[in-house]
Image (cartoon, rainbow, N blue to C red; front, side, top):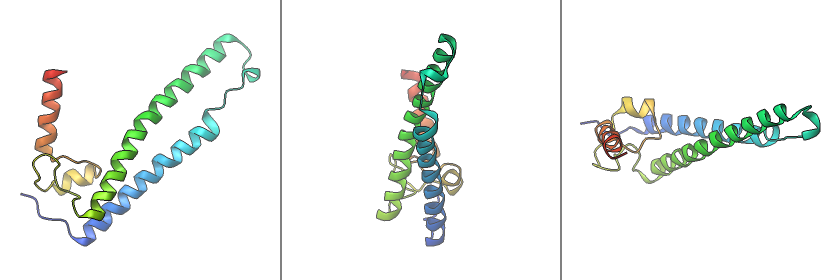
Length: 124
């Protein structure tokens, strides 16, 4: 069984989560300000326009994933504030420090995550 996290460890995880959150937000800002502007006058032919539209669609799908990731990061930060960070949402046991270091936004211990993935694979 994993030991409860110390205040120093919680601060380290808060800093890491905030750094990750800021990186996601910065990529989103960059996407909106630079990558999402399509000017048909700048594109000489239909192939260039189609390619640019495909790229734009791909970028939006990536940002959708990042929106989900951002929600997980924010939830983990709220858990630090309310004292439930590092506790598995399923079995309510402490999540191992190595798992938290690898993925601090996780809400599941490694055993529960493996069970979830096995269920997803079995039931599609």
